[in-house]
Image (cartoon, rainbow, N blue to C red):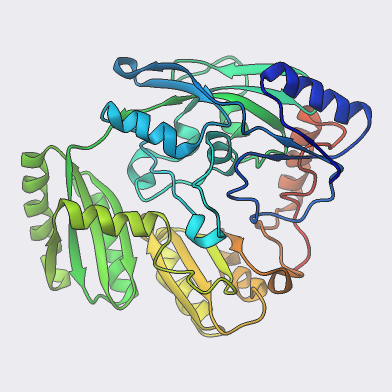
Length: 391
């Protein structure tokens, strides 16, 4: 990469993209570079650094709406929200521990990568909270989509398309979000020492009960955790109901507010794994009912550390004592479930020959190609970042 553009405003983003388009030069989009290690290596001739596109352009706490530049640091926006007793309901994770970054990233990176934390089981994912986007396509054209309301019935729901697109469709300059009040307090019911299959049943029972569980995770050979949030009297009453429901599963313990917040922070940010930077880290999504079975099959062929989030539907897995990422063993196990696995971290050597993102079917590949062509016909934006390579 020889040229780095660092625009100070949207018009300069347009000019940079138009320059790359005119010169048929591939362009890498970056913000704080906190997630730069995730994705396939790219061959680009220039970079587009969006980190100067900062500032809150709209914040109406009473309307639960916030709009800000894509280059805003996530930590700064979360502090601003916290000062008003609000937050992003999907609990965006901080992967700096896993990826060796000094920051939790920018708003644009949060939307482009679309990672959600434990509350996803209750509040939905990132795309469910993005109301609108201003962006520049690979054609060098400004477009805006969505707005300050939740529903967008005019054509395609472009905020959802751009969320999770990893910068391959457009350079986002401003994003509008739905935000929600922070829970007043929380408590977590812990079940001690369940086997994985029993833990899946316990989490399913808790999530299906009318007690509004906001997160459910299982740490093998340790604890199964179910979180309740809200006003204190409600949390206390619902904890008692949950204890009654889940007492047949075994020994119970209740974690108070501070301990609960500390535990879920570690689960959200995957701080239960990954201290050894050479070990590959996988994020595996499967039907919750298949979680225990999938991990058991993987453990037959490779040694791993792992834990479950999202009621068993998300497996965070660390490969141990291997010089490769073990993509064949992991993806071979989840194929029948319809799940998918993303390689979050690996050394260059261990990643060799492994697709970072789940290989797509021919139909999905065709549809993704058409979408890419609509936004970026010359393929200049983050080319190959998501492209599946061989296993």
